[in-house]
Length: 581
Ligand code: ADP
Ligand code: MG
Image 1 (spheres, rainbow, N blue to C red):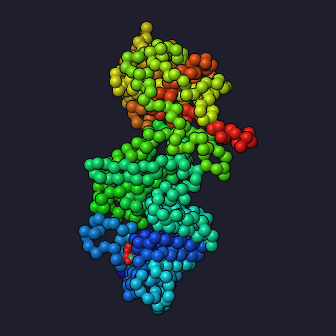
Image 2: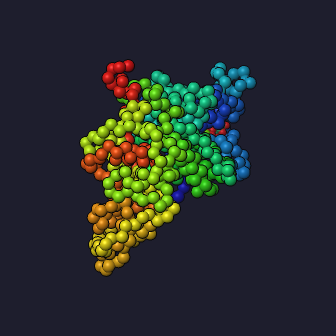
Image 3: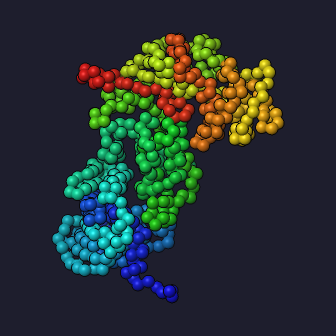
């Protein structure tokens, strides 16, 4: 076929494909136009997942009558008119492509009126061509109605998911914008019924409540962070570590209030939650990063969902630190959730004033002070505990041991089940990590060196982590042919089989290494190997000491692998279960 320029209608369809991928993209573009128009109220109506109809009505500034037809020409925009403005975009739109693209693949009707005009104007287009226009009475603002989407592109229409899948994309989209524009009242109607409304009163927490519902909203912490050098700001919400989801879709990011997708930002948040969440669980966040317009390139993706930062690592650390700060300041004990549909979490244990079972200053320092011997194998009562000041009244009272695995304890707000292995792992992990920052972890020399044979994979792990293994108390030297001579092990391992402890730690390190930072990996593996196992009977004083030590750690609620150390059954929950209230 000879090369020739495509006829305009065909070119328009191709271009439209970039912008209008599915009904949700139509909603996105129209809502963004309404936001750019300074609206305080935006109503979105969809029918059959948006394929039959999408209608977006706003009360914004409207379009001058004589400009309505121009708005439907390609690259027609009122938002930028120079290269400088393209380099520092402050509006959500700027390419002037949305209206022509949408119109090219649907029947589009726009009615619009500016505040000072007497009446409004209406324009109807079919497959991109105007079919009628004229004046029409209407309220101030703009209404765009898009129907029969992809009616002239049967192939694309075939590829659309079910109408319920399209609907949920649109619900997600509208609610995300409601989060970051709390001053705008959003309403979404799905097939004639109200599906979502936001209050639009300017209060971020109330917008958040409308989006996540009362149950999740009580566990959302407010994030405000600023990098003093760059002036980058991070604001929004981050879920308490007890509130997790199985995938990343609940981590929402905005850059200058533009909804974006970014692996880098997800990593920053995951990094902030490091050690607080179970493996393969993800937090709920909604964060807006405010950054000078000229330090972010929003023009790098067809539907503007991805952006590029000039100072990527600064953005990363600003986000990571802001989120980490609120999590460290306030991480609640995972609570036994009330049954679905029940009222929000119990009033005797509200997030805002979660009882401080775990005072950070009380005796954490003294207990883990330098030079203090670690206990060996058997739990407490050792010199470490004798030396540390006792807390007068233990906040958690030990009731007993369950299945040789859990410690049953009573606290001011109900019952706690503590996993003895996870709890001890947390205690050892913190002790190990602190020790290496101050001095070397105590090493226990073996009476006779023990030869250990390693698989090639284990040998690689050993080489890759040699330094931290040695810092944490292992001593070994090559003994030829994949073998090593083990001369010392971390003192916390006590009398266990030294060869097995090295193999265990190597295997765990290899496994963990896929998901964590290097130093952490070795410490977590050593803690896990050294910690008391499920199935070990514990005496009352041992359990008391373990809980006290756990309370003294900065992150008592999860083990270093991110599993919970304890589960909380609130008094209110128990009373409800027994029909007492
Ligand atoms: P862009 O948003 O990139 O400028 P669009 O094709 O989405 O391009 O819109 C073209 C122009 O039409 C906008 O620049 C704006 O001036 C006008 N416009 C579109 N939607 C609205 C609206 N809801 N209210 C007021 N003006 C609008
Ligand atoms: Mg636009």
